[in-house]
Length: 74
Image 1 (cartoon, rainbow, N blue to C red):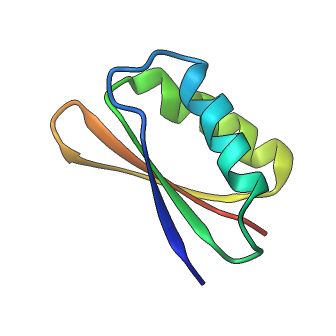
Image 2: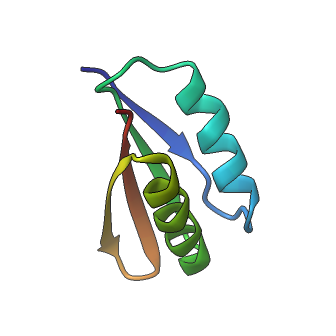
Image 3: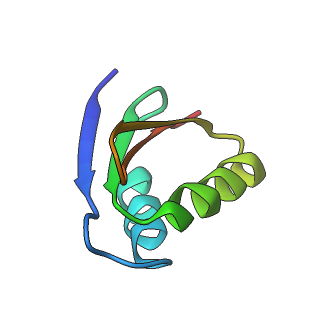
């Protein structure tokens, strides 16, 4: 299992989701992508996308106003 970081700070929806999907296509099953964002809508969009595409997702807010979205490729 590999973990990759994707810096999407200061990027608005839907750019982080588009970048995440592109990055996930390059990854292997079981790998985790950590998307860093400062837009609350990114987590909502990625949660919906993850449900539809059967990806595991976890969202954390390590700093006030910044989120880490963990997506695991099935």
